Length: 286
Image (cartoon, rainbow, N blue to C red; front, side, top):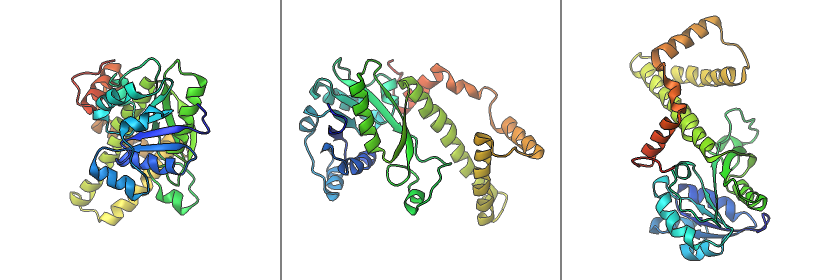
């Protein structure tokens, strides 16, 4: 297996993430096979000039098999795919939940890896229209990726996995290697349970400001959008200290909005619970 020239299969190539990773793979020098079951998904794949290959044909000779399917069906799909993979091949998933929950089919001679994009940083220095337009990543704006791979994976397998990761999420700054559990702590706990929740809270607060307090919408957006940037850069980068009055308001907000025991979300039991809910399971299997 050469990291420079790989055979890659994308299972679920017509879905949202499948289309994203396939566009980048199509530009690469790797040999790529695209598998998709749904007629609508097949139409999307063909509309971009890619051919459909049956799943069993796509995966049997692949060095890397990417499962770009919803988390809730990853277990079932992996049970059909893993037995058909060649010895030494890599099963690459795009989200850590199913791997952490123990849902993926196992084979001693198949390497498992998972890689999730960080998305372009809020602090990214954007200099082109393409970078400004790419808020998700994988198109014009560079991003980091966090990934995990079996502890006993060979250096060659890790290199092949990273080569694939750098293509599907390109342009990539760095690939940060962690454990599956650490990746699960990052997503969902850090970025979905906390950061995405705060994003929705900001939207609700904006709605209350406009529709309950009666502040003109454009004035409210102007104030909020500017202060979100300064709040993030001050809090996360220490660019400038908050004023004494602002610190008092921050503490009032914490006392009023946040539960005293909120940090329990980092307990293993809470991580297990939220991932089970996300995957619609009674409990994780790990």
